Length: 370
Image (cartoon, rainbow, N blue to C red; front, top):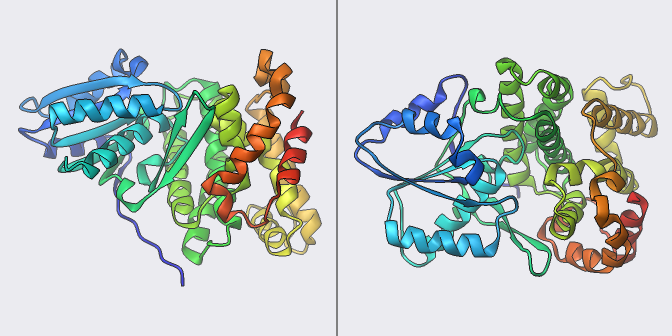
């Protein structure tokens, strides 16, 4: 039996921040990173909130939020006791906000509303029951899944993403595509998640190059924002897979941007998974749905067409190779493979990969990357 539930109310499109006018006479706690706290975007958010609210800001969030940061946030939440918490920023800020709220609830601190407002189009964290917290001492990222992690509200205002730099736009956009593809071939995929994943993938292929090249195009940014949320809905229900299980280790060990790590693995993982007939047929079906090959093409031809289009997309987004992205870390890569293999095997996202992966196979995939 499959289940499908949407627990987050969505507000999208130009001017959707106006929905915040509903909050009056509240203590509102905004969780963001230090850069965003100093940017005009925070002023935009503040100005969208009625003046009778008390606003506090926690701006200690860093990329790949750490256990220490979450503990810090929980302590502040205990002291402040806000009624509304807003996770404002990229996936790191939203993940941290969700984790802080969730763990605080375990100790009896409840809030009225948790709001997620993304300022990048990538993680889909605004509509997922997932968050990722890292332990820098061990070089491990811990993905967590729990229905209590769903935000109550998500606001998708494309005006908030027009200033995102091209490289971050490219990285986060490839994260969206990875979410869609992994949800598409997951053993837990359903007609409902298929519809979301297929639409998200089509939007990425169509709009990501323009979003990278012409970031000030609000209409294009809106399409990528929607794609991110659609893919987030899909994987929150269907799960992820091997791509993320390994990408988490590349991020934990070498601090590679998450979307870039996913992009570098994507075609390698597709080839690996396609050896399983069900996954191969589904990749082929998606390639045909996207118009990458004739409807009568056989599965091998269709899968190759999908891989070709992904490589073209990466090229158009000017994504670097792993060797370039690793920089000085390249010399340590081989030595860290055993630790990455073990951590990938323990990663919860591996459970919904369409093909089981052994330690030896994961090692081979990592070695193939270089």
